[in-house]
Image (cartoon, rainbow, N blue to C red; front, side, top):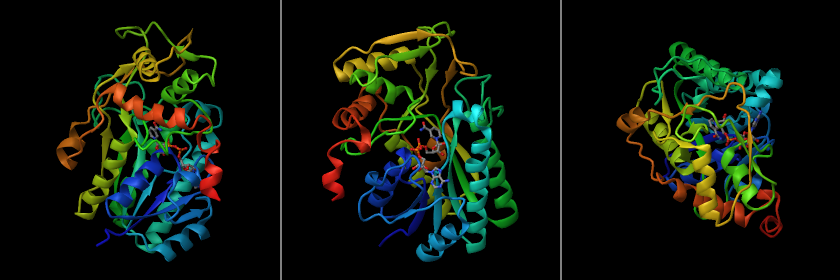
Length: 340
Ligand SMILES: NC(=O)c1ccc[n+]([C@@H]2O[C@H](COP(=O)([O-])OP(=O)(O)OC[C@H]3O[C@@H](n4cnc5c(N)ncnc54)[C@H](O)[C@@H]3O)[C@@H](O)[C@H]2O)c1
């Protein structure tokens, strides 16, 4: 027996496509709604329904909901780059807030009452205490984090007034790829450390920039919490199931609860790739905290989530399989045959 249809906005993107795969394996029927602005049709199995449309298009949203009658939604679609959000805040208010509002209004009209939302560690800004628990103060330091914070507030209102229950998952740094090696990170704008370091290891970039070597961390470089994308995907399935069983609206951190420095990540990439990665040491970037590590005990205790990938080299080995097999990402050779 199937577990029902789930509308997945942004399901052709990096985290979305892995989650779609895990949903299907878990017995759900995912339907993807994506404008393919940074996602890839090739990241989805041919039997996954894909609606290519923009969340600003209310009629397209209504049509997708009427046609597929989802019991729940997972909402990944958003702009994701913090630096860009400071240069072009209007685009972020539009896509991350206004378009989410469109979605919530269409869900309200169609009486869909469950949603899992991609939030971010960016809601916390510069933490006073690390590891960061869910009740830590939220002072986002960029417009991206602020848009996630605002959407969480909107979700609170939509539950209180309209009965739309939600779980916001505050991801720390997503990384890795399905060990099958056929899908992985392929962001058109490259800003993530792991993807950039892999491309440098492949010789497709001259070097990797290390921003800040004088942080109060053991080796002076910034420390982040790297969580495998399949572990994130499983958190969504658990969240959906909890909502199904009546869970109240809440937010959870999703991270390993352990930090690795930029230097450690680069050294681990060198080990899994078996080749050196040239580094360029640079100044700290404004707003980059020294250390962001999740206190992820609540999702473990309340949803039974456990990371299966806990070893940094093992996590990065899955990413290396993807990048070394598809150096040009989904745009590279090899896909034409499968698309034909
Ligand atoms: N990657 C991370 O480390 C990370 C960390 C914290 C939070 N998040 C959040 O997770 C979510 C997914 O991130 P990702 O890394 O998979 O990014 P991604 O860019 O790969 O995926 C986003 C997807 O949404 C689609 N999309 C964007 N705007 C749309 C619109 N208006 N209409 C329809 N589709 C639209 C894109 O085409 C893309 O497929 C985002 O909400 C992001 O803010 C990501």
